[in-house]
Image (cartoon, rainbow, N blue to C red; front, side):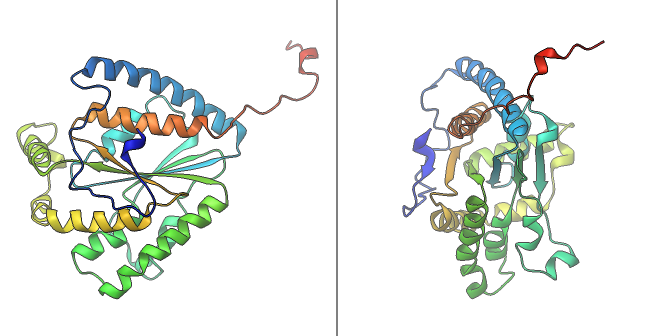
Length: 267
């Protein structure tokens, strides 16, 4: 899955990346789902050690175009993990109080504590994406935010946070099908908003914003991965593989038990 990592200093090249890539599982959805089941089990065990040890912190950032699958990723990748040690933060339109502070103020409070996984469903990157596309602040302000974000994430990493950032990359045609499905299926109609159509017209502007943001902020301490996401099962598989591999390299262990526990008899 290293092929999906954007190496620091290199261009993200989003447009050139295949949204339907199934590397290693071409045409074999059943094998992919079987592998996913094993990954779920591994992640469940690794997260238990993370929580028990209380040493490491993990931040996972999910960004995508509308219908990109952020909610589905959270649901499927973290299936079986202990909710006590996993929290999800969604960053929508800022409140008046949040707007009265710097744009990173509302984010810092939701970063993970020791032993936790924090998942950002959208994130501080909205302030170089939506803000840029809709011209909400002058260009000179959002342009300097790339350096702010890199410094913020370096602070988190220096204090022991492992950061993984995923852009769920879907095609414009796939988005069209998913939006239509929301209209056609009664159980999905609630997800549809007319504003999604207005945002879809800005597709190229958003891709340009993502291209620059990912290129400028994929670092050794907080790398970006551009995940092919037209096939939901493969999206989940790719992300799970990267997370599990990262966890395995943290060198986590269960804490040592108290002394002389063998002598205790529960009556």
